[in-house]
Length: 484
Ligand code: NAD
Image 1 (cartoon, protein in one colour):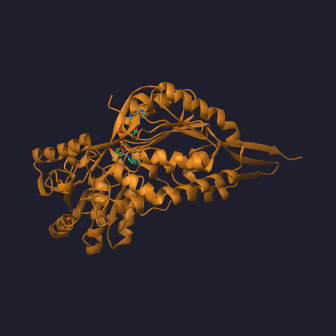
Image 2 (spheres, helix red, strand yellow; image 1 turned 180 degrees about the vertical axis):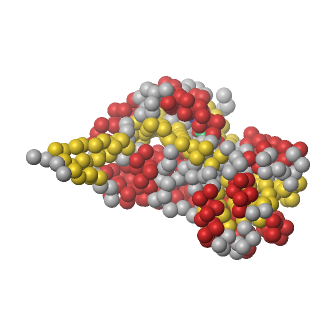
Image 3 (cartoon, rainbow, N blue to C red; image 1 turned 30 degrees about the vertical axis):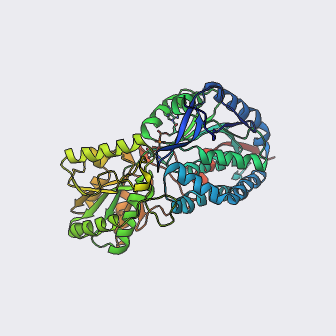
């Protein structure tokens, strides 16, 4: 246990901020400096029990509201977040080490958009009908019950709001368990929810780590569905625990995504797009393109321009508007990422740039690493097939379409990918052969919230996004009405 800090977070249960039931805390560390600035409760199963009980008590009344009524609540939450836009962005930047410009344009903006988007979708919701000559079938969307929403540290509120909005929108009540590494904006969301006066027990939040809070939440008999976003090995544990009691389950897991660059691409915009796909959020986005496959004909020129562009990226103070790359999330994580760089060297890899820590002088103690480009590792090597989740990419030449597809599919992950070519027919053909849930052609992370989001193979089970979220967070019930 550490000494008391001035910023000690609390759980939010049954419409109240409440202390957790143990004396255990975890320091919240600012990744840019390595300095503690708050403490997060290490809650235990007793706290989970209280939160699940509150959610169960609230579910009948909340589930009985119309979709339209609930859409009004989502808009109120979006309004509340909007008034705190700058606070949201700066908390996210401080908590994760990401540049403030990204925290604004990606995290804060999208967190608000998630509530607005699902509010709109709810307003447009109508029951499906299937007519028979002598009967009508009416498909009613009922809430599932109590949802456990578990989220990672890389896009904290962006991902939490992506679950909370459709979950409560479809009439469920929820218990959130955000990452213990980045709890600040989850706390902000609870403050907003409290301010707007959402009925008590509809949204509850328990802070804590995986073993103490996440695992008992997933296993809880009072929980009916689990929406989990995080690493594949954690997802495996979650799946085992949830399946024994037949909980509805969505798993959004890790990725190792390929950017496939053909000789006929638009060179300049491809360089910019592939750099962005590789290093956004310091490469800590599940969708990042960290295996870059380049057609033989342009491999050397692409390599030179790519490395040049990477070396121009501005790394430094996350609160500076001009910064493009911030710090990595934690000491453990940077050690893991650097471990892959050592591995690449052992696997015969050549470091073209980066490959080492890089501490801006005012941030000694933080978790900083230069963006790293590696070539010469086999495309079946661990570095090229395992998720590193940091600012490290490998380059691989390929001969033709067939080989590009073979390399791209040669990993256990199947989340996303991108294809860069001016031949749009070829782009589509290659995309359709990729074993992933999503592919972008000549762009990356260009998101329409209506489309399905999720992966195949070890990248997850199920889809969220648009009507796929509405389906996941509800149970369809058919009522068959016989005519006279
Ligand atoms: P993680 O799996 O370590 O933790 C995710 C969450 O699960 C945290 O809240 C953690 O406390 C909790 N948790 C840990 N053990 C648990 C258990 N046994 N039972 C229940 N909950 C438990 O992941 P992370 O390091 O926070 O995030 C990085 C990972 O998330 C990467 O693999 C990344 O690819 C993945 N991710 C995937 C997506 C996607 O949409 N597919 C999006 C973002 C991140």
